[in-house]
Length: 338
Image (cartoon, rainbow, N blue to C red):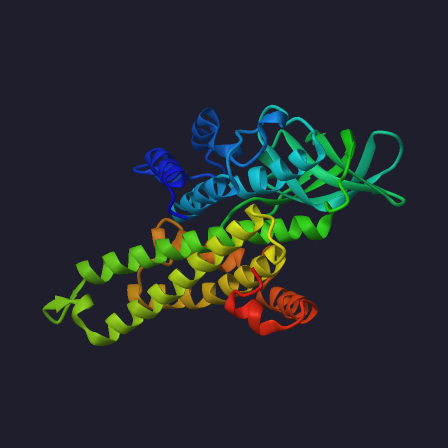
């Protein structure tokens, strides 16, 4: 995804991220404010509902770069998920930080919703977007986060909270193709992009370390075994990036095989994340295990994100089922189905 507009987005977001110190807390609000002031936090969300417009591939650039820098901001939960739900339902983006829940709420009476919803970043959010059901009816709802929040974190220290919900919400009918499974697929796409960005951070850190570190009078990069490990790491990181890019373009084009592309990307990126983290730590020796070290910040995200929105086994099963249902698999495998 190297077209001119995406490269402009990459340069602009890179200018915001480069040179920033690691944020000590679980949410870098100053960075989020900078992204919001420039509109990068809601790229890909229609302007008609208050988003920044633009393409999904441009939003993917922001997700990739914030993952590469291990930034503590909810780009995926805000734009990929909440913004997508709001855009599909035609609901306006409210002020402040808006994230999506991963569960469906219960619609009790009228505009009132209830339930305990897994909601990443809920402790910092002003509003939560959720899918709600009442009988056979499904709606998209925007809920203020005034209720109780049960706090939890993933391996990378990112908020993975539960929102205790009993609120009146703004509600709109959900389109027929918007449900919990589509939300999971959208989250899997976002995590694939982020996994690829974190893998790139591991590759860059390892390359720099073996160039600078000297053993037996020469840099580690001069040893053949180290070179082979770095080549294997580069191959995995490149495959992750290519599969994530392909999935983004397929979803952006609303291609018939977009679901297959997302399943392949998440299955492949989740599987490769383990290998990338293992080789990265091996090349760094005893260094890089702390959260403060850039390697540790990247690998803890790889370990956490590979399981979120479904791990490799889940998406391998989905991929196998989709390929079986699509008919002859060889044209699909070789690109003839496009």
